[in-house]
Length: 195
Image 1: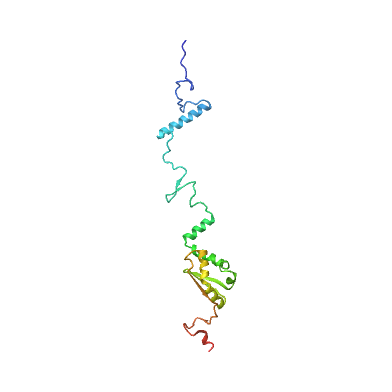
Image 2: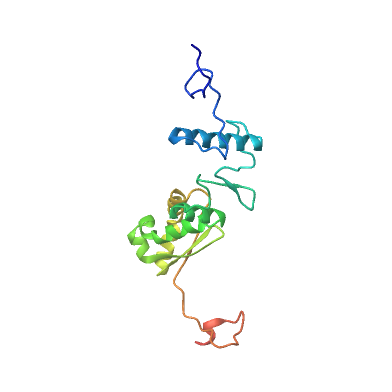
């Protein structure tokens, strides 16, 4: 007995692959999936793409910025930064590291020179690696001048070598007799007043 030729099932040996077309509806869930896959393969083949090849013209998840650098999910300088890192970068870029360090020393002056010396001598200015301090009496000014090498050594420990190279100690400032817009430069000063 001969079998009548009929459609071959998808699971039978020698079956033709399913080639769905738009005018022939696919059967059930598995048939719909096969039809969708076949349409996707046909569309890819029409574009000249092969399975496993990267898509042409895609940049992936990264986009180019105006300056040519790539932007993506990785950390970069445009992300929010910790405050301490931002301040440190600002100090380095502006070359403010030394003035800020000296400012910190002026804020801790009593810890560096001791409470007794700090009670009678305060820092005034720092310019060109010279720290100027003012004593409240001539006796304390003389005492701090004698302690200058020790104070400079302590400042070198705190700030590093070469930051403060000279310590200028000034005594108390006397009253000024210069009043008004016109005053004599190089005159005898207050001695003229007292004869």
